[in-house]
Length: 182
Length: 319
Image (cartoon, rainbow over the protein chains, first blue to last red):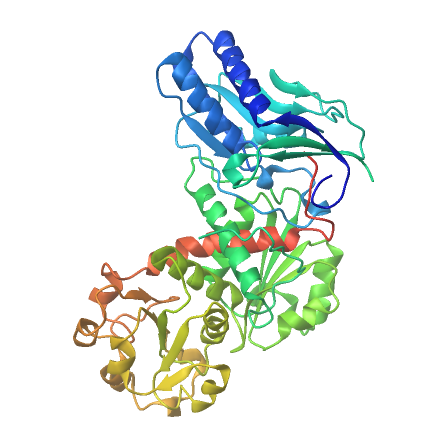
């Protein structure tokens, strides 16, 4: 049971999150021969810690530093007038994206609208040579033609369920839960 | 500057600072911080207000505030129309309400109003479907100026709480002063008002500030000095004998500035009257953040436009 009493099951524990990220890092390394051109960009807020970790893992695989940025998609959403204005977090891309391979990182892939907004936001910083998408969990229910390149775990869900990702950087436990509809 | 994840913006209008909570003020600051970064990019534009119509309804003349709002709306990809009193039907006898109704019939989403009458934005907000932003109403409030001033203090000093802020000059006729006093007190600063007694009545102590006519003392202990312009257009001649006397008694001269704290921040909402309320060397000196206030004003106005545009639905959005 979760804090709020909603029934839940553990999808990934701390150990399996580590294993999954290590595998994704190796898949990224395998896919990209020109390691010098690869940068990692985390999507605020769920993707930023995962991007930091993937950046470190890739740096140890390749033996050179890998640049990591973060992008906030709040200003690029397509539903801004249907919700209370989202909280805007800093976008920090302190490097040129022109000609780079950008690995976009997010925790959960769902409708795909966040990723569409992130692709739009990246345009403001330059024209990457290609963009690849890495997610910890793909829960399905896409509303746009967006497909991840690297997936930690595919979790078929119903629309009433929720995926709760907790990472140690946020100051608590590390696990991914599937919360059942109550 | 930490973000408070619980704060949410639920306001359709921005009419004054008096009714805002400290959390709401900080939310505007945090949002403005992200928008400030947009202005530093090669592409200074985001699509947040794409397809929205913003109308600058400036019944009282203004250049800097109007340009700042206009550019802010453009950087959010909104369509902007400027509407000034000189070129409007108000000259032909149309009432403000009819003017506003006409603009609404054009499906304006956000109306930014400056008016010489106190409460004009509040009046519009009672019947307009769109959002209303107060860009200065009479001597009442100028909320975005206070938001950008406190944003600048926070950026430079790391906090507002506990700071000694002196507002020096024409307080009585100043909407900038009133909005700043509200914002500073809500954020926990200690506010001192100073100037000629005719322009700084004791009654301001009821808002929770300190009023002093000892300018050297007001300068000496201040972490921030916010200088306000002597507003010739709003004043009767009887408020003080002459500009030269004002400068002698209350102007921020080199001699007075030398007694200020070494880390003092000098602010001014502009336009500056060089040699009147502030000496040129001080205005251009390293303590002055006058031009950064202009840059921050743009970011704060983008944040305000962005926040009032938000709908009424839940904040949580699907990934």
